[in-house]
Every structure is written in C-alpha cells, then in structure tokens.
Length: 590
Image: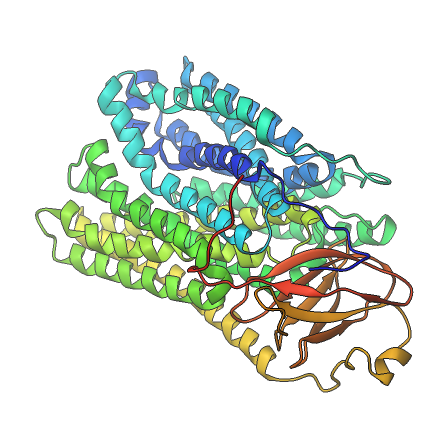
C-alpha cells in the first residue's frame, strides 16, 4: 500500500525470533491442559489426593485459564504486550515450580488455579504480538505455526506425561510434569526480554480498564464453566443452577458495556467487533470445533488406559498420529489460507469428520492391536484439524485493528475454553452413562462418546459452510447504489472525507478487479466498505476525517492491512497486493 500521507511502518527485524518465544510460551501453557491427565494416578498415590481434589487439579486450570483471558488481553493492548507477556510467563514458571513442590493436595490445587490464571494472562499477548508484528501472507504463516503448536501441545500432552513417568518413575514422576516448565520458562523469559518488540508509548489519554466490566464478565465465565468442569466427574452432582447465574451476569455485562460505551467510549469488549462477520463467525466456529476437538483425547485416553490396559506412555504414543498430522497441516495451512480462504477451513472440517467416523468404525470392530488400528484414521483427523485451527484464527482476526488484537484474541480464546468445557462435559456424560448402562462395555461406550464428538465437529462445519456461502453471495450480488468511480464528476462533488485509489498487482502494476476494501477506525468499528471496480479503482467515504486501517482483499492475492490518514477532503492511497501462491519465493527472514 502506498500513499504520500500514509504512516508506513517497516517490519520488525526480530519478528521471527519473537515468534519463536511466543510459540514456546504458548506450547507450555497449552501442554499443561492435557499433560497432567496421565499423571493423576501417580498424584493420588503420592499425595493421597481424593477424586474431587484430582478433578480440581485438571478442571481448576481450565477454569482460571478462561477466567482472565479477556481482561488480560485488554491489559496487554493498553499497558503493553511485552510487559504483560513477561509478567505472565514469570508467574507461570513460578507456579509450575510450586505445583511440583506441593506437599499436599490443597497446595497442588491452589498452585494449579494460579498456574491456569497465569496461562490465561499469557495467551492473548501471544496472539496480540503476532497481530502486531505480521501482516498479509506472513501473518498466515505465523498463525499456521501457532496452530501447529496448539495441535501438537494438545495431542502430545499424554505422550509427554507418559514419557516423564516412565523415565522418572511412578512415585515422583508427576512432579516433573510441572518441573519441566521451569528451565523452559527461564530461557523464554531471557529471550523475550531481548527479542520481543518494545512496548510503544501511549499516545493521548489511556483507556480506562473497566474493572466493573471485568468482574461481571469473569463472574459469568466462572458461573458457566464451573458446572461444566465439575460434571466431568459427576454429572448429576454438578451445580447446573449456576448456568442461570451466568446468563444473568452476562446480561448485566452487556448492559454495563453499553453504558461504558456511551459514557467514556472504551468498554472492556468492543461489541462492534462482533458486527464484523469474519470475527463473529470465526469465534462461533472455534467454540464448536474445540468442543469436539478436545473431547477426542479425553475419551480416547480413558478408553486406552482403563478399557484396554495401556500404560500412560503407550496411550500417548497411540494418539501421536493426530499430533503429527495436525503439526504438518497447520504449517502448510498457514501458507495456503491467503490463497484459498474459507474453503480451506471447510475442507479441513470435512476431513476431521471423515477421520473421526473412520476411528469410530474401527473401534466398533474391537481390533486386538487397537493402537495401530486407529493410527491412520487419527492421522487423517489430525491433518484436517491443522487446516481448521490456524486458518480460522487468521481469518477471524484479519479485520481486527492491531490496537484491539489482545482483547479480540481473549474473546476468541474464551470461546474456545468454553467450547472445550462443553464438549468434555457432553461427551463425558454420554461416555460414562453408556459405560454404566452396559456394565463396562468399553467398545460401545467409546463409540457413543465419539458420536457426540463427531456431532460437535459437524456443527462447526455447518457454521463454516454458512459463512462461506454468505461470503460468496455478497461477492456476486452488487450493491444497489455502487460507489462512484474515483476521478468522476460524481466523486469530485461528493461531500465529506474520502480515500480513493487503485488496487494493483505487485509484480506488474496491473489493476486487480473486484477487490474488497474496508476502513476500520481506531475503536475497531467498520467505518466504510466498498468493492473495487474492474479497473481496480475504489472509493471509501467514512463519516469523519482521521487515521484508519485499510484492509484490502482480493481473490488469489495475499491480503494487505495498512494505515491511512484521511483529511477533511479527498485523500489518495493506492494498494499493492502480492501473489498468494506458495510457489513464489518466500521473503528473506532477517
């Protein structure tokens, strides 16, 4: 994008090194969601923990993780992402050490609650840093790598936990599930100090933190997730009445946020973001997919260890094909998303469904070598999953202003955490209910659980298909009143501020027809939207002058996001879009 009045920023020379730090930190926090599952029997024997206390070791982490996501994302946006990243990573490292040093179950549960909160504080900063440092095709690659980390950490958790128990021994092995984070965390802290981008000084008045909004939203998240996570052990005993409290607190939160918008203009969550279709649909799809995605490992780990007598290491190895497939396709998907767009996500969801249905069919035959029998279907499901998580995250956040990146990521990840809790609760209820009614028939019970898992992924697929069809319809149906062409008499006579220009190809300067251009203001509101003409020309007219983000997308081209300053009259800004095909040479990484 080029314009004489545009604020052009050069890419950060350390952006790929900063991404490495972010990926390591993200891997640690997400690995701790699943790595403790295989160590629970060892914890019970070593500390004398009850079943309820063990449940809190697993569920408490997920609960506090989801509790702080949005608020910490806002803190990172307003007070500095590097500062929040380093504080959160330090807290996560310290609480990991405390969990490993635990002398009784109460100490372990408290350490896990604090560890989950630290992980929830850290993750929005990771996505916010990626939003800040990368644009266009590079952002897709960066999110692709982060998606690979999500898939690997979730699937490899049982394997890593089983390997540690095998290496250290059953008695003390569970402590090393937590100790392993300490050296990695220290190294990541030192590299983060060096490589993460310096926090920019705040220009103008700081946005208020909206403490009341944070408390209301946090209360709603806890009230919703608490019965879901407790139901993993006892469905009938979970406090389901808290869901009504969650709804009430949610309504109060919405009312308060609207008041904050009217009074000072800076609510905790900018609801205008939800009017951006890519963000709203991406968040919904992520919630439903994570409901099915995480519940896969929950039921399969139980089935393999308790139903088929696998050791923790053997159970982890049996789930490794999913992790391998997800890791490879996530990296590839990050490069393809700018060219293929939403069809890539829909194709990925279809592949996940095929892989899970094949897994269910294989398990119904109850093969003797069940680990080898489900390897190929899980590999297929993993490959599909890699084409969903990172690409969906990339498109969901594509039109979100960098200033709102952490908060938007917090909302997106809160949806994923809630989805995970819903999925595990629903699948666990069906799985354990079937196990009880069939008097220990593990084969039929795992099939019943997988049916629910497949159903949740199918719901995510429906959302993806609807989003794809709506997007194509908007492309093919022209506006009733098209924007006047730049340079025409009508455009010259148009009143108010406007930006005009031409969308061109980077390789030869030829116009790009039919590009979709969006102006987004500093608060995250869509200020104007238009479709370019056949000659590449466009005209966008916001309500008022100011500095905006100009988002440009076109079929077969890498998207572009840049800043443009619009005066009280007409401003000029040309947009240059590069090719999105993977066969083109990649940029040199400094």
